[in-house]
Length: 264
Image (tube, rainbow, N blue to C red; front, side, top):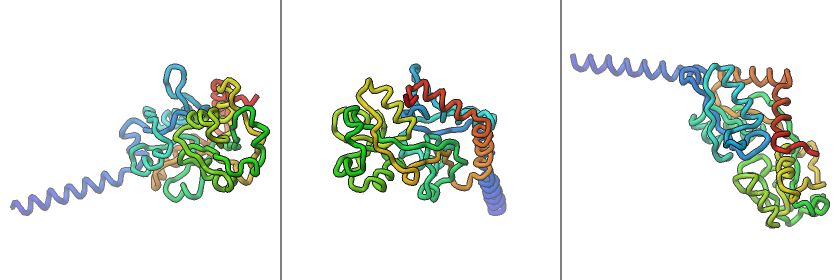
């Protein structure tokens, strides 16, 4: 009798685990009543901390639109940029929204949503060097910065092979290195670079150097764990809507104005 009871309990456990594993990503989010999103909040206008130390920016707005569409609470987690994709892979967070650029290499380990924004890349330098560092030749042998674990790091290595890549965790840190003369400049998304310049009290400028469109025109997308197809479909519905009705670009422009990223 004990052996039969043990067998019944074991079968019940297997059935329970099977049912649990059959729960989809979207069902898990709805059952939890919250959407946990990882970001790195030092990247205005996409994501940053406002004057009240609250997360703000067009990517935070997008995260809220997704949570609202799913009918759940939004929970944002601020973390190192290069830790977001591993956290998505491990299931520690549901999504990563941090101006992620779509690349084939990343697509091998995570899934991308539809793209919601396309960004040019700028080289930010000391104000007096805006015309000095205007060519690839002028940057040869110079240290050029990028945020650790980003597509900008890859861009420096591919488009500026004669320069030395210099990485730090955040762009505020890179901006300080430029001001101190420790690096020639840093490569960054257009709106973020404009914000860095606008908030530098005249110390920084956009270099006259320009990448070609083939080298650097990067689409932004949400990152998810592979196999979360129903959650991905729900997110794509939201992205398609906010792109089609221009509400994302409106929030993008508001965030640019709020952080000084006007380009003027």
